Image 1 (spheres, one colour):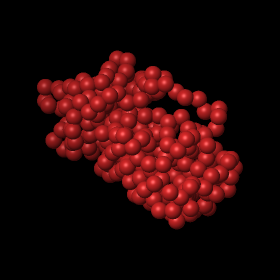
Image 2 (cartoon, helix red, strand yellow):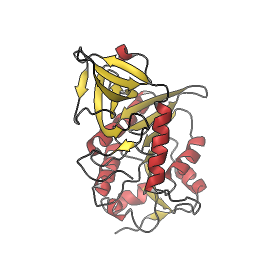
Image 3 (cartoon, rainbow, N blue to C red):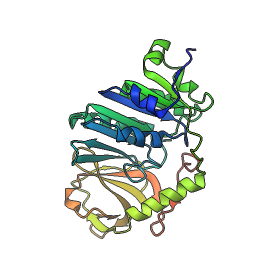
Image 4 (cartoon, one colour):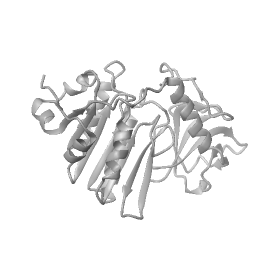
Length: 290
């Protein structure tokens, strides 16, 4: 196996970034990907985009979403979000791949020539993490992969690519020593806090079902996370399912004040306690997300 080429500093990583193209950050949980993304974003050129592909701990949208933003000029930033409906990629890999590609295509449509992509920490071979990340790389075709790695944990991903490709596009960094590990309990508490902030000013909206596109891959339980989408499939807002009114309309609690602009609904895998926004695990697919 070809040994990865290593770099030692974030300044060196910045110097390797092309003036145009796609830079993808790769690594497990608590390796400093988002900190590196923040640093590189401060140095980004004009007409640049930042994409966040972490549905649990991302910075560009609430949990359960993927986010993107394009810097149009110094004063204008365009933001867009894609609904995943869960705080973990597990069980949502098709949606994750579709959403990632859709975000990249939108950033280019808006004129971005330099795109920085931060990814989630789902990398283990067990459960499909390595296969998913290899498929993500194949779909997004990055010009540079900056891989934050401690002890060879990215080898199951790296081994799927030929040596020539790795020499041209893959660079490895060690995670900064100051990056601290966050327990699953800390991660769940942070998601709960962000959901509570998001739904703090939400109110019940009635959504007619006859005109809306609907995807209900999961049963509609009270507290089911819902995506309220526009006509192009972008997320307008999150909602929590409450029930049906006597006329069959959906009762959804959401901060979005324009129900007539909603063109489609998508039921997520995640269920929240309607009062506390704590994640309720009623999922048949496995263990709670980290």
